[in-house]
Length: 594
Image (tube, rainbow, N blue to C red; front, side, top):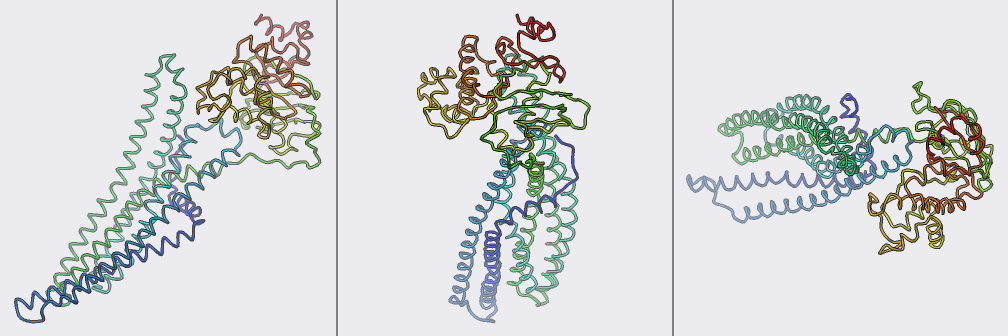
């Protein structure tokens, strides 16, 4: 969970309103329908008062003989008018709710679209510091919180405000004195509600962050069940989960408790207002200043006046959660995107051969730290050469590859491809020049055909079949009930780790990049299959500059050149035989395996 920030209720809501303003026409329709629906509802008590006075006069006539008998025709007209008003109000209310739902779903759709676009354009550093579960929570829980608020409170808030204004006008037409007494409670309610919001907003914000942390733990436990069960860590993971779960419970309880105070506080204030209104109203009726029907209408209006205020209190509760959710969404949207370099339009991408130069490269993941991963790396790999990068864990092998693809900015030095600084390429053009097979396989929820074609969306089915055969995975695919149309599930649990690796290799074989990167590409296959894949790799690496990162030194013996890394620097360089004869660090690594 991040450090608490100062409550940002108003700025967050104001910024969210900017997103909602894109639906201004629909909002105007909602406002218009809300006003009309409220207006027709508000007029109702006036006609009810007329009906009440008519009934009272007939009762007085019956007992005293003064006045006139019941005019049923007039009473019928009043009741028909009353029913008509409420039917029209119902129609406008229905239109209002439909349009509100469209606005709420539209805003949620736009926010999710902006978030996923943003995620695809964020630099790799962002994903190194953020929990996947927390980011997922922002895309789901936080957007859903906004959707719920808009769908439930947008029209309700407009209707409540329109009701307050309309009822206030009607109350003034009945009795200015009683209206002023009713208005006296508004400042008291406003002050008390402001204090509660200020206190509870901090807890609502914490609640959303802890919820994101909790989702991260759930995601870890779900994806790591095999490891958790293998090491009998169910109890430890449960305890770890419970700590966050308890923290969420406590924070949510505090937020709910404080927000729950709004309704009782408002009820107390309004009930006190009722007492004074009733006392004054009784005095006015006894003096003949008001009729019984007018008092009945005023009491009904007063109930309609205080009810929307209570609803506004509930809306404020929901808005606090929405403000916290908006904060978390805008935090992602405000993140700096991966900087698009100013491209060199003179580069002919079709003529790139893959000549790579590292000139005094210096790099650290934390720019403000002295922890340097790559200290002073220089190397020249001619186009078409097969270069292996070896060294102990943490030497910087994979980091070199990430720098080559422009995932991180250098602290010093430069990297060139065909004498063009990689910063001269757009990120799309630069990465189009690379084909990668990583140790950590990644397959998406789709068919095997779609996963292989992911390397080049324009290749034919025949090209996919050829790539699969070259990667030694065609036979396995053919044994599946649906063959290449077999759907790989979200966790890719219906194929083995080795089979996933072979599919990613087939994916690389249909790609068209001039530079190939193999990062422990055969680490998940058996030795016999590895031999077959090596033969297929020879075809894949033909006429391509190839970077091979491997711990199995037997797989890189035929490399044109081997770069031996240690503590972020190249300590040795040469062919396998040259390095063995040299008898240095490479020979130590080789002898440790054989």
